[in-house]
Image (cartoon, rainbow, N blue to C red; front, side, top):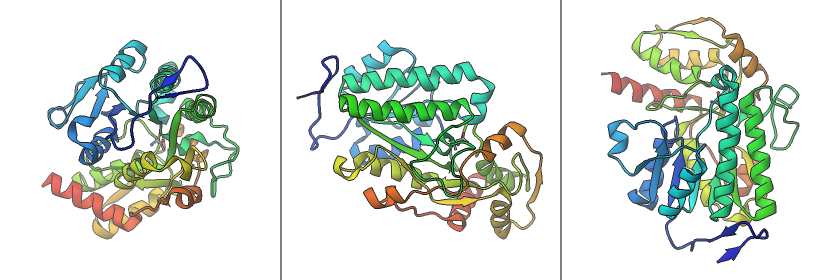
Length: 332
Ligand code: AKB
């Protein structure tokens, strides 16, 4: 039993030989179901609990433990952690960049107040806590090409502000209370069987579905808008690898990770190599464009590569091939 430096937080550390018992919040978003699948393979079905405030589709409900959890309800969250002897918490609940701008007060509640609940419960119960951050944690005054781990971070979205807050609070709790806080700044994540909800990088998922279904795609960002991106398998593998990395390999607690960078026109050209009849038009969403123009164009993830061996598998050609194979076979 390890007692942290502050008397109000007692952390009960789990033996490294035990499987972790994982709770994933915001589990029905773009990443939760895929992460649960991966972790369940590794640690056993019953050791990974997905949670959300929405009703799960039946394939999710029948694939492993699912529980209602509202991160804004401190008691509810604490009860789940205690009753299930949770040791790892992956905190995926958040409003993304574009939807956050449309609902600032909800984004503030979920992304900031929710995080406070999660941090306190994680510190109190000695959990290893993963919170994703994002390229959106940078802003127009950050170096954009490339963006290093440590530089000016003055984002102009509530999403970005809340993620900088999460990075700083997590690191503060780490230094102050010994919380095992781990954070990766994700680029735009591209997935075939789950949809992103309300982000600026969503076009890079929608193009594949529209290309296969209608042969037409209307893009809401300008053709030359370059952003860092990653295929979901790389993202989930990075997350598991960082969660499992021995603490002494982590020289920092918040790392950039990246795979590739492209613009809508470059992505469209790569898709057109497979589907030459695809027609792409542009109708710019001013909110998303302003956000994208303030974000990194290239992401420097050399610290993740050096410290814990991060390496991506998918570049643009493999990404496009994999997405089209998946969506194409699904629509037949
Ligand atoms: C968004 O576009 O808001 C997210 C992100 C890059 O964090 N996909």
